[in-house]
Picture 1 (cartoon, rainbow, N blue to C red):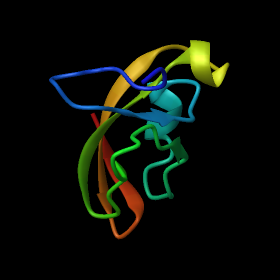
Picture 2 (cartoon, helix red, strand yellow):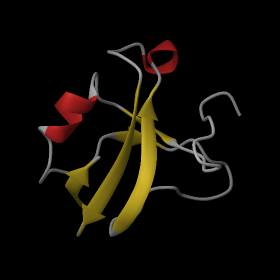
Picture 3 (cartoon, rainbow, N blue to C red):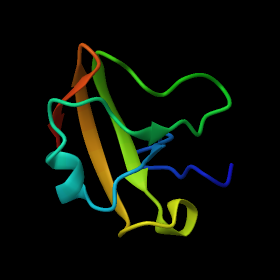
Length: 79
């Protein structure tokens, strides 16, 4: 699958942010992302999952990987 790659043996969705710093400024807001799995949704409105920005695909910013925790559909933390 061209839009996802493996990190700790998990697929990752694309995060539509130019940097991890920019993503962290959006804590408390909804997540801007692109699903990449054809086997079901990776996004969780309550839970933790991995995501990445791939500039070669999104055309923006720098490459980064993040672990996002969501609560009630809003970003609670970014690691």
